[in-house]
Length: 328
Figure 1 (cartoon, one colour):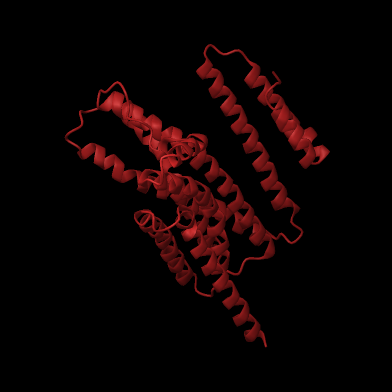
Figure 2: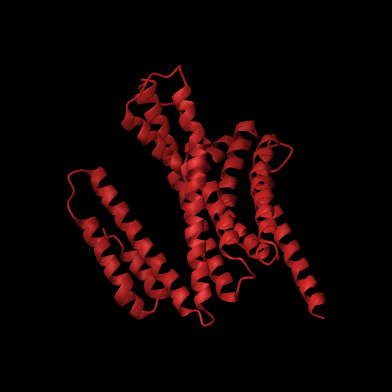
């Protein structure tokens, strides 16, 4: 059995410069191998240490790439650096606020439910932490959209546009990991805690579509397809395609934000962004209700993204036309 990180080193050597491999990737991979090879008292402890080591590795890689983009831009100015710092700070703050707001209804619902027996404080904290991943498909795109709108007060330079798009790609990759693996595990862990600690039941219910990983959901779809096109099969297909479409939302919202910042009135741009944000997730909710066999799950899952892309293209064309005629 090969050491952890051997494949990562092989892939990274084909992508990064030798200096980057020597001074950044190499030391981080060495720490990763040291952490994962150390003896741990339990299998759970070893898995947690390896997960933490891999997270540290990818954090170092992303930080290096991000720093290289900022320092390596030929057209970068001091204003661009300030704008990017504001984008990062605003995006993080807005994402945290949206996450907290989305957790409030579930928290008050638990406090106001008289049917459930009282639980210990540590159990409530665990349940609140397990609910945080469920908010990321909304909080990350919100931070990307409004963080850019509130930080960039004028048409973005080429350097800012490139950095915002890279940030959108990073957020999309992070969302893919959250939606594909972290959220299903967190959902199932939440159900286990509720049934065992709150409802005092020994066995939680069977996993639904929201608690299945990529492979489990695909296997369930293949198994259900042999029995015909039932509503459960269509909903499983919709959940599967939605997991593919949702990670693209941060990048799409980043593109839309870069179009809106070209408008002369910032408040109008923020208002249009708010309308788009609400309409996007409203369209997703309505599309789930019509997934009864009349529409394809693939078309329903990608409909919100296609609408935003079409609107972004339309506004971009209008801006180019108006700027061309305005300059002549």
